[in-house]
Image (cartoon, rainbow, N blue to C red; front, side, top):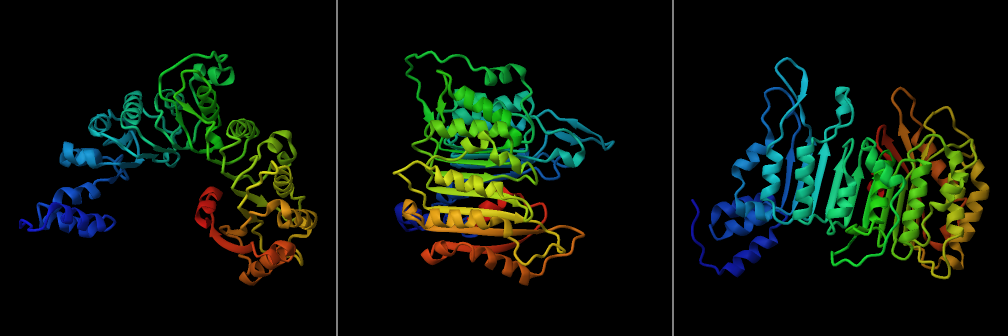
Amino acid sequence: MPFPSQFSPEIMDDVVDHLSDDTFALKHCSLVSQTFRPRSQMHLYSTIEIDFTRSRRHGHKHPLWSFLNVLTPRLAYCIRNLSIVNYAEDVQNGGGEFGRREEHAFPLLFKQLHTLYSFRLLVEDDYDYGSAPTKLSSSVTSALLAMIESTKVVELTLTNLGDFPVDKLTLHCPYLKRLMLRLNGEVKDEDVLVQARFPPMMIPQETTAEKGHLETLEINVVSNSHLGILYATSKLPESRITLSHLRELSIAGHCLSTALLVSSIMADAIDTLEQFTWAYEADFLLDDFGSDEMARAFPPNPLSLKVSFRHWHDEEPLHLFWLYTGLKNTRRPCNRLEDIVILLTINPYADLIYTDFWINCYSWASSIDALLAGPEYLNLRQVAIFVEYSSLSGKQRLPISYLEVLSMQLKEKLLLLLEKGVLSVQWMLVEENVADRDLLQAVL
């Protein structure tokens, strides 16, 4: 039974604030004292995740209704970070077939929210059910866009959607700072595509509308058309967001048209871009690294550079020469690079054990070793190379002892960096089906 406290509200709030990361303690605090309760609930409801797993199966209850039944206006005001995971609009009927349901809970929830810092929507991967990538219904999309605008969302993550009107984000959401688009479909609206390919000529005009600055952009190349639309609409006079102050840019996958967009974005953010990440995630098309498009898709003067490639021991390492050429041509005398992370996924077959796995890398290694250890990169603090070996099902694994030798062979080709004390080479044994983007995030 709750009992009244003799301590001042300030002391009680301070006690609860110190327990803000302990959910178990906060729940008990809210039960022990009525004075504790409001502050405890503020922390408990600040981050909410609603999981739709299994909700599309016949007979399972819509999880949002359960949450709405306990959500009061005061509790809704506490929510700062909201995640909807494994969401699906298609549900199973009694006959085992899937059909789209009317979604009423989302709009009701969104109308109760006040100010959000982050919103994350992870749609269940419909490929497991043999259907096309999910596109949200128009009612849910409209409610979602209205919520993002009204609650002034700062960080937005959309995953596994087949399509989303990203042009509306640039035109109506000036508070957006971090945007993560991991979509799995292309834009279907032909009018929007035409606008992206042939944006209208910019006409200078005075405006009193607040213009925001996107600082972080993360996107996969499956969303290439969405990236084009985002960039094109950001150039419009009526846009509420600009990419010219971008600080972090992260790309997953490969497409030459994406490389062209990346080069344009980096040119606009030449003075602010600090961190560039590219998880190439392609087993082929390495010849593209010799193209003009890829040559231009290199950050002009980053603080941090993180890249991952598939590496084939018996081919010329064009991907590594792309990296060297880009570093060689980096803007000077304002070079500020501090750290480089390189993730190399190697050929997994156990019968391909050679005396020197890196025999085709002599020229690259000697060149980049001299460049990065030289006077042009005085700010460099770390060159971290991770050699990732994915153990494929049904294939014999390489012995761990060989992975250790392989890492040592590469390290011995970069003696100047090793002597400078900034080089580390490590091997990684990773299970299959782990994306390079996720690996890059894991090793940082």
